[in-house]
Length: 246
Image 1: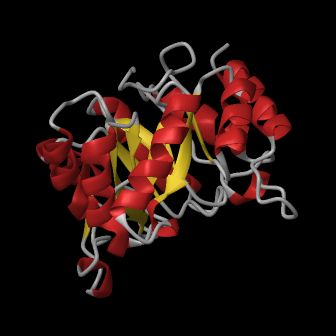
Image 2 (image 1 turned 90 degrees about the horizontal axis):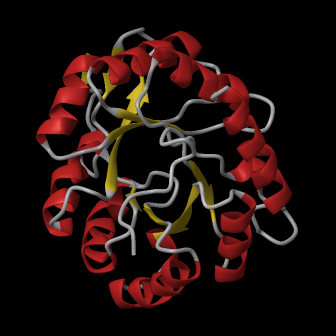
């Protein structure tokens, strides 16, 4: 099983939620394998139940598993680290302060581990106080360069920039993308991304020269009746990814 996501042209990999193993398989095929499937730790009562179920997702998708927190819930940070150590998935979602623990427990450098930072309203600066305790404290606003270097110190792979609110923070996002490109770091835009704004969000990161981009598209492509991520929407997103790299 590969520990690294299957990037389109070694550059972009989609991140969508999987409602079931069958849904994960459908989305994996719709994305031609260029996807990691998010399964949320928050949906499980124990580590054991999460591990048992997530192994089925790994088997169905060539390990294209993204272990999620659950709406960025910092209280899930430790559970994510523990179950990821056992599962060895391709992708791990973490709050800023959980990155070091996840990387140490994984025991290898290939799995992508992101660190959540938030917009501040100020171009070139991000809030890194996203952990279980720090998120309840006053914001810790630092230059994006410093946030990237701190994440690199902890063994992180990428900036998870959340909540994007679509393109509400466009100038801030552009600065983050430029910094990720400059300091050889991956970027994961997250929050409020849909079929209408996806192309522009991905293009900004591509044009900035970001080495690897993992855009998260969640609720906007979920069927409200079934809870499934729509494979036809995943196909549409893949088409836009291919277009962005032309």
